[in-house]
Length: 343
View 1 (cartoon, rainbow, N blue to C red):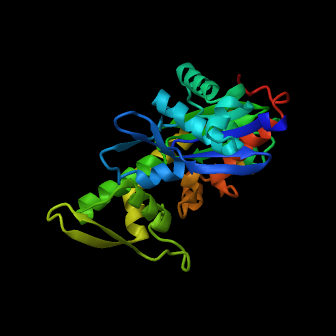
View 2: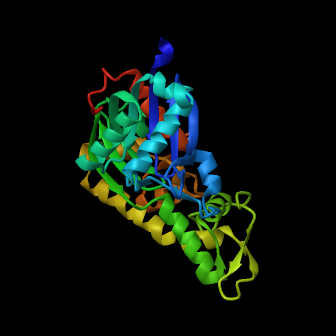
View 3: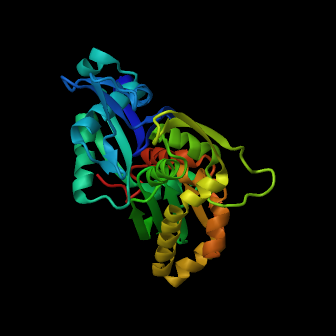
């Protein structure tokens, strides 16, 4: 019967969804689905759907159901969640319809979620099979995933740069004292790179290629220490003027320049949250430093740049991409012990 009573911890992200079960990652796939154009029938989800994106024949189309960390397309989100839950629980096809497992789920939500956003997530999760659902704000989950004692009478600060949102929070005594959730994050950085290639190199590229560039030569500093400089990235695309194939060599210095305005927006928001922080907690933060998580924290030089800007030490968490998912997993084990969990 344990097969039909399962517990899942879900980080439902704009870019990727991560699911923990029994302290292990059982799913880590892009938050995207592919549907048949005529029937709207589900064709593929996750990795398979991403391979179809930007290469879709007329009979298919792709949807990313989440925008800025919250559900933008309810029906698509339900289909995606249901498909991911099937994968995570091991219930395939018709078996899932006949023997729906009784699911207990903890799911991370952005700090700026409205009651409408929360209701959408609650309803989608319920239709996807959740019988007992808890929600946790992503900054709190991220802090737990990093290993911080969120219930201690101590001030800790988290900056989680995800795909759709950057979550900034000061946490103490099991609560979020000050916070900000802004729609300036990885997706905007990707757009910066797409726009830059078009304007400066006359090359048209897709977002998948821009993501690869960001990973290969992404940097927030125009000068990196010797030995840490990545090799230039050779990008191939269509010339916007001639429509002929075109190539360009992209350096980390170029990426640093083209994403600078977006990174500056995140810096400014960090400073605003610090300005609102009570003096006692501010002193704790100066002593403890500020933790970085999320995919954006993997940009080269980001901890150094933020440290120099704010004059407080920034540290990148271990395996920052999984911080929220690990935190939801810990919350799942103690749903009776954490009053900050929401039903």
